[in-house]
Length: 147
Image 1 (tube, rainbow, N blue to C red):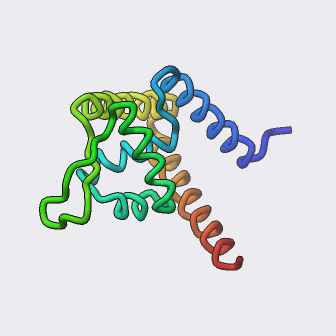
Image 2: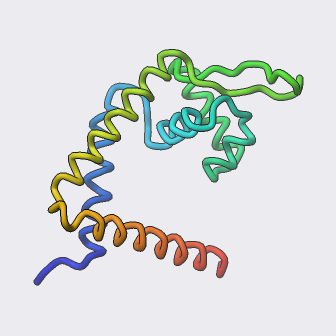
């Protein structure tokens, strides 16, 4: 019997988690911390309140993530230029280097994964995955609003 599509998707999710754990081993980085670094890489220096919204987590959660990343030398807090009550969180130079390398690895893995698909099937696979992600997002949002 062929595995269900959901079983394959869960297998892929598990493999991504294992690959990330391997890549971050010994760095002090976790999936949540890397997500925050990724957001900062794209959003630029941000307040913790803005980061909480962008990461869809509580301000308390962001404080813990920023504290950990500050201790590990990945981010620093700096005064906000126009609001003396606020601080900005920004990547350190070494974190910029790490994130630049991570973005390049992201592109390389994307290319490696696409190369496993026959060229004539690539567009259809990408459309199918986008449709699955969009529909799952809708199902999750509906379930959250029902509770």
